[in-house]
Length: 252
Length: 243
Image (cartoon, rainbow over all chains, first blue to last red; front, side, top):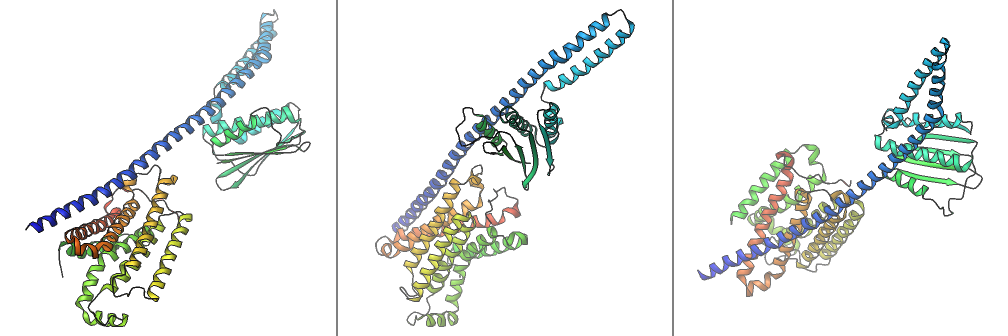
């Protein structure tokens, strides 16, 4: 009887020990896994915050540029039109009054167009192809250089965040080309390198530069970071006297 | 036929396991994450009834023992346990673990598998221990290989991105591998300590055997639950595919 009791005790103790060992192992695994999850969440939040900051910076830059453009428009265009309208409306000649009213109508139209550009809603209503077309059209209209746009791939509608980043990067690349390269031609090509990914190449035949030389600004790093936030990449190749080629690769 | 309730459970599990597996849609049955756990659990629950069958039908068991060189005790069925539990089981367990690993670690497990098979072949060819007796060394090698496979799985579970936001308690592969590891370890310890404990602490040996059998029973239940998850609409995590 006593031996049987010992037997039962031994079974219970071994069972408890083994069950405890297994439970400790499973709990430890879950504990380490949860710790890893917390770390990953923290990292994800950090990346998200960084992404939001970049997006906010870009939106600010666009707003600043828009305000500067609005200021120029108010001074150079609307101000002039309003002065002319005032002169016409103050004139004693009746036909001048009609001309003055037409000018006021024109001012109203200009103000409407300006008010639209003050917020970023226009980003949603425009496609990347259209935006590039507009930008190249503006450059060509100044007579600064010739421009070309080749669309070998029809870009699908992108999310607003992605579009804002892309618009800013394209603007920055075109600004750099105009400011530093003095090109005769700027060509933009839209292609698809692989399914689900689009490629945008911005080429100019300007002065070019040696990309291996350290630069004082942080423009290239900024552009690379911005493309990274939308899951894309930024690549630049250039040689002194041989122009510059920029390749933007991004999911589309 | 039925020595205790664990022996009865083997027959019950065998029937339930087959019913569950063959009620799965054929597309699932062909997938390795269902087929391999089924084979593993099937081997585990079928071995005792099969061993009993060979003991019962001595006219089959006897000639096999004779063929293997066992002329003294032709009623032994250790050869069956050696072939199934000590050779086939580690192979199936390693294939099962390999299925849950990415390509780089699959290669590592393939090498473990290849090493084990080579050792087993050489071991049987030069007859270090006769196949009709308990082959402790081969069991040690098999258990070690299985444990190496389990550690590789845990390493992947704790380092790969795919698992970060999963609830590992709802991951069938986690429970399958955990039971392979614990059951193998316990069986191994029981096996190597059996001869010493028989003489000195027989009560402790009996308790270890009982705990081992109970763990085996829980293992069978876990494998059946993993296989039955799609049928019972149990909420489980989807295993990342590395095919």
